[in-house]
Length: 162
Image 1 (cartoon, rainbow, N blue to C red):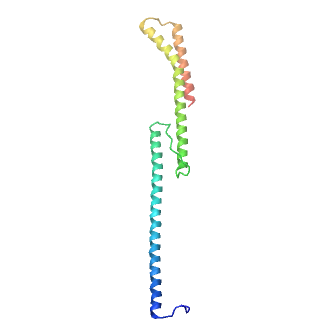
Image 2: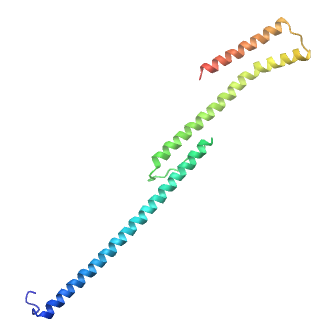
Image 3: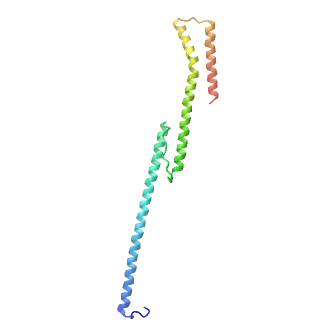
């Protein structure tokens, strides 16, 4: 009170009521601010969960496409993305699988091409024997034997290169 206001009963009560009102208002303001902060936290958590859900959904769709043989599908990678490292690794795996699939197709095409000539010779000659257009003779049988040896060699070469 420091002597500025006389210490009457009304003055002391007024100061007490004022202090109590001020404390109540400050408590209400603090409670409202805490409630605001909680709501902001919930909104932020929901936004992060939604973003994470979209990232996981994108990875799942990409993984499904990959499992169906679509090696061109890639997961989206965004900087700051919580699953960016996983998406990068997934895309690397998809690229490797695509490269291996392409190599397998090229290898199969090469093998098919290598086998086509001896098989065509064998088939044509055997069909000529069946239709009577050719008679089996030792020279033709030796040619057929050479072609079967060539096929066998191709098979051995390709099976040892696995």
